[in-house]
Amino acid sequence: MFLFKKKIPICLYIFFIFLTFNFTEFSTNIAYSKTFVVSKIEVEEEYNLNFNKIKVIDRGFKKAFQNLSQMILEVKDLNKITDTSIEDIKKLVDNFSILDEKFVNQKYKNIMEVEFNRKKLIKFFNTKNIILSLPKKIDVFFLPILVDLEKSSFYYLSENIFVKNWENIKENYFQINYILPNEDVEDYLIIKNNFQNIENYNFKKILKKYNFNKFIVMIIFKSENNIKFYSRINFDDKLIILNKNFYNKNFETYSDLKSMILNIKNEYEDNWKSINKMNPSTTVPIRLFVEASNTKKTLKLENALTNLDFVTNYKVERFNSNEIIYKIYYSSNPNRFLKEIISFDINIDTSSPNWKVK
Image 1 (cartoon, rainbow, N blue to C red):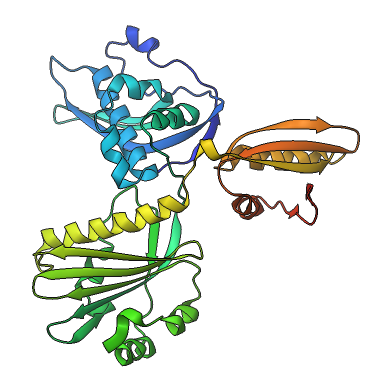
Image 2 (cartoon, one colour):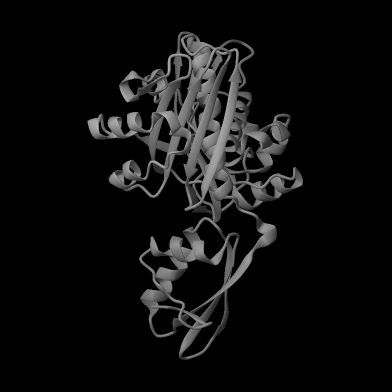
């Protein structure tokens, strides 16, 4: 998992030059820039005459970089960074901690937490022509239906082999939490009555009943040599249709089943990431007016701006005895900014060109 923190950058490795076998827990603990924090990184190494703790920690950095990349990059971009050297990765690290370490059966094992400098990471990905994403964990209503075209029948929920295995096949970087419907007779009958034209059915009655803003309807069509996934994805009030075909696959074989589920889940994750892309080259300037006399409101706003994911920078552009004007550099659209800042209990008056904090 990752999150954002404020820390002061410090040099790594200086004290490691003098480190031999000091295996006590340590943690660098001051930093100032926003960072991506990757936690619970587990690394192990044989403990023998060739043991080198610095190399073990380097492996932890590399694993943390891979985990973070899988979380914030689309699958198509991962190949662009597979050969990233450990030297380049270490340049992106602000801070790290060894949370736990032990020796078990002639093996050294540790659990690390690594903080990557956000600005350096964005710049690094830009050199690779990669735009990173800042997806958050979301709950999505998930309606999966398996259609056997050869038997002219369908399988719903507990009868559906994909549903039985869906939650068991997952990765740490997944951000989507799938919420299944209840085993409801009414839902079953709706699907049964529309079965012959299910690809064109809108499912509005079922979707309205469960009242989720974000949903995925996944219909799997099974024929002799082909398994087709037809998905309707709605993450941001915009319906996306996804078609994916798998040929010569047998879902009764676990390896094939796992491969298909991972592939489809990655497609859904990529769709969510595409909505949450952060593009510094298309930064939108936003100006906010705040009462100068209201210190509490000012501090609250600055805390929000510090922690909002798509705020790349902000500054006080002008102030007088009546008001303070903030200029905010935002790497997404203004509507998103208005939605996001509400989560910090801040409301913006947009009735005039000069937006004001209420």
